[in-house]
Length: 426
Image (cartoon, rainbow, N blue to C red; front, side, top):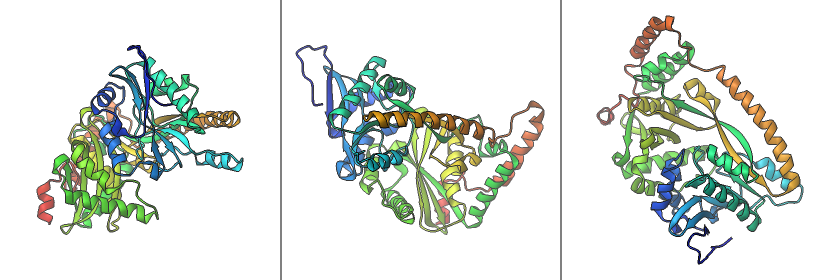
């Protein structure tokens, strides 16, 4: 597409940059902050770290094609775009589409992708000053897909405004599902447990008891409290998780080193210790301004039953409740999260395929898939883990809170486990 130039100072210039480093932080992040659903993963520092660390670069199948619209020095719209040589690290699966292309002697790759690499967190993707600018950005993406001979355009986990602009540009919506916790005014983790059906509550208490009986305590550290040694142990755990699945980590150690320096306020670590030794760690991303937390990565150097659930769900939930956070997103997929208080939440992406016959076939498939997904979400909600609040049950609920508090008072949850306790254990 290249740069456009004009003597008319009111003309709009479309830029396509092959590195996020070519874009200025201030205008980008200011534009992000004005969106309906900003997340820290769309900050330019995050996207730059992915690139500078070698995690999301052309050599790993992510060729940056960041698109931005300018009027003079004013940034009107922008998005992180990549020419992809594969479909790894996306969490909206189109492998079957790629296979169909291959079986018909066609190339599915490269494709043009607008997403945050390796980060299935819903939020604003097409950053824009208004709907008109967003519509122009969507049209520019379609034009870039054609110019680069991409088979298709995909915008993953966008917000409602993104969906509307992309539909206007000829894209079709694809509906997905994640599991999120939202605050309901619980005073503490015991109150949260008391709202669960008895079988769900007892299971969580039993799992936490098993972890305590194994001698595990947790320590929570956020922001600049995290040391280089903490990050090193985390990365060891992160690598181990991939090793156990016979895979290779997407993210380089240097990416996390950059996060520790450039975005420390957006990270929270839970370290599990037994006998003073670190045995596991989970890493949570934070958006302090919007009181939102995001489950990201986990790993352990030895197997301890139920430790994963405690480190990745119970400790973060307790911490969120204690610190007044309103949302915890548990990441992609996983019905098991629902039994732990995370409820089904719709997600959406947008897709355009250049080949007319394949486009028609995919549109028909997405229509059927969308109906099935809607029914699936309705079915899941019928099996919610929470009791239906009834005024007459107030006394019983109060008793449940007291019982839950009694059974969890010794729990090493993130809301009550202090750094001193972890240090004492060491």
